[in-house]
Length: 320
Image (tube, rainbow, N blue to C red; front, side, top):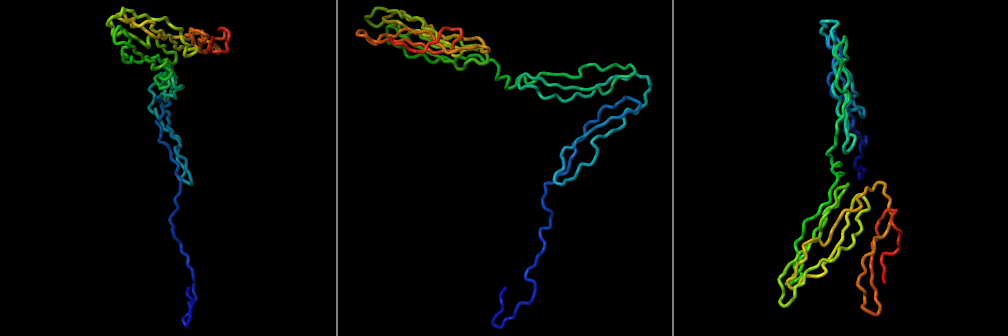
């Protein structure tokens, strides 16, 4: 408002503020009307003749919310059926089965079962034949599920051989070797791996000039290593080396195993009781000195053994 001045005219006396309505449309609402499910099929008639009834039903599928419209109507309907007159009041009326129910959920993720049942929709009368057959049946389910597959026994798997190494000598006979590894350990009582993991063969057998022939000779097998597990089947191994390499045209060592593996502790873990113990002592290694007093050592490994096994020890290495 601008106030009059310098002989100007004053404002007419009137209202200085007006109010009017706006946005008169209804506000949004979360209201939802009630909804019925579709009608189910009509059930079997209660009789085959002389007048009976059958019914069907439906359920409330969606409840009303926020003031939505309520469901109005019947949940069950009945109608007449079997209205044709019976030709013979004493006619035999057979028993009749109703429809099978849906299969139930499987009882287990692996090797379970599921069931379904049915009821008699019409009982026999006047000497009619009775119903025959099962009222409740079961069948297997989830026999090939991922859970079943994961728990099946899995055998040990040995990998492929690597390439042969370069021969150890250019003449007089040398040795080449190759190896392979265990790719997968056995699971769930699967079969253990058995076989060779390291092989050697003779090579460059031609004699070097001026040398007497010397044949290759294998050494003795070492002790078996501790088992990889204490029960349910594991693996252990042992090794041997070549004591004498062939030279000057001597015979090479047969291409047999330098390391062996075998199954061990194949008994079930169920009910077993074990305690910590020691393996047998290994061989003494070479003395650190040839005279004047030296040291040599031998070792053993810590392992789990049955409680009935020998006495416990407290050292894993001895020096003499």
